[in-house]
Length: 353
Image 1 (cartoon, rainbow, N blue to C red):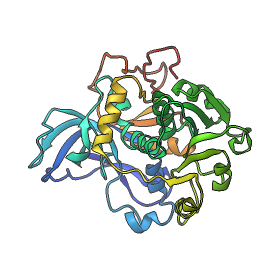
Image 2: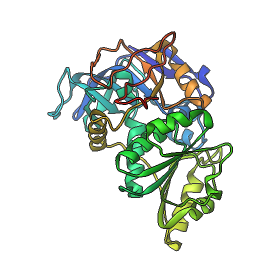
Image 3: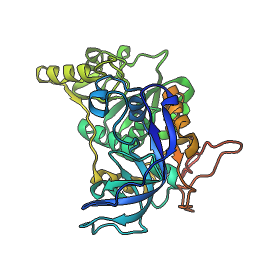
């Protein structure tokens, strides 16, 4: 089968689509998925670059030991012993722990769920990692109807989902993004958008019940100042140092939290089949609308990760591994944009990005 392989750490040149042996048949509690599309997320860029350097202690000193890729959508081709909730032929989306950028992926059945019926393959494929991260971040912050929520990094994959889900919960959302992406963030459900280049949210008069910081560009103490007296700061990722990445910042938040009424909570997203089910329900109800900035064919998969690394993406980038066979005619289906591969999800109103 074809798979995206990584021959070292560095730029897109270390990623090569090559013929590799088929994976072993699914074992107990696993399923094999014929992959139709795969989503790209920030973690794929980190693994490509091998940064922060501590990643190499986990994935491999010279190159990743395991096949890369996590977000997939496709059709179940085989099930292992003990799997009763899925069967061959089921259209599913999943969060794999390895090997998602391939024509076939073997995934623990616990993290495989029925794909949203109203979304095509590309749009369903970009949900698992980023959607789960957004959902768990809002849950950690305790977001409720009427809350004032600030999402820093609102135009990216996790940020777009976070804005949509927070708005669906009834929160008043302020997003921080570049001016060029302000319309995209408003379309996702933000009431207010701050230009990250000219408007510093930590110097304004607004106060927030929950801040979801997906960028890591502001000092924790500055973010604390714009929380309400019992507000919550949720920290997810950020660049940090070249060696340890965001770990020192998140550790500092953990150490500071017991000494303040405001809650400081590092977010470490975890795979969850139950969260995939919840995200599917949100998608089918129109509350979660994946924005796919570009769909790249499999033989150019490295370009998808390079595109995300460039920082100019609105929402997500997907890789088309096989021809899209989902062809839903419901509201979530999308069509190729004229003259290119960029695709946008159909929206129920004129606010579609």
